[in-house]
Figure 1 (cartoon, one colour):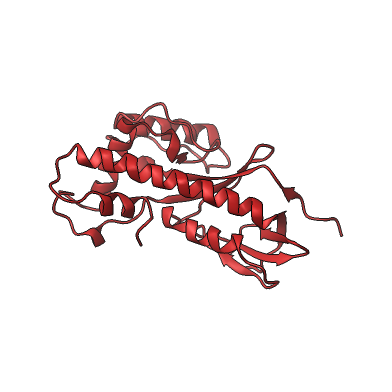
Figure 2 (cartoon, helix red, strand yellow; figure 1 turned 45 degrees about the vertical axis):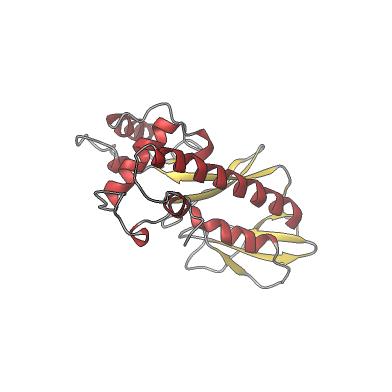
Length: 229
C-alpha cells in the first residue's frame, strides 16, 4: 500500500461564509445548473449579490466558494457583514439584545497548503466555534477514528505510525484515510488560527464601540467570533 500524502506547509485559515441571499437587494436570475456545472456563473452571481449591499473587493478562499478569510476583511466590509448577520438573526437592536440571541459567524477553518490550496473547507452548519475540534485533533494519539466537526459532511481523524491521519469528507459512510500530518504541524496551524480569531474579536469590538451601544462589547464580539459558545 502506498503511504498517504504528507501535509507539511499548512495553514488553518479562519473564514466566514457570505450567503449571497443575505446581501442581494433585488432578485436576479439564478444560474442554470449546479455549482459544479456552471461554476463561473455562480461566482458572478455571488459577486453581484454582495455588491448590492456595497460589499465589493472580496476574494473567496477558492473558485466557487462563498467563504472568505477573516483577515482580509476591512472594517467597512465587516460592518456590512455584521449588519447582514444581525438581520438574519432578526436582531433589530444589538444594543439591547440578549447575548444568547447571537451566534458565531457561519464558516469555520479551511486547511490550506501551498501546493494544494484549500484541501478542506467548512461545510454546512460549520462556524467559527469549530476551532475546538481542530484543537482536539492536534493532541489526539489513539488509533480509532474520531469525528472532526467542520459541518456536514465532516472529517474523521486517527493517529497511526507517528502521524495524524485525516479522512475525506463523509457522513453516511465509513472514513477512509486520505492525508497524513504531524501533530506538531497541525498544532502550530491551530495556534496561528487562534491568534487570527482573537484579532478578529478586536476588530469586531472596534466596530461595535463606534455604535455607542452603552454596553460591554467584548462578549458580543467574542460570541460572533466563536470564542464563547
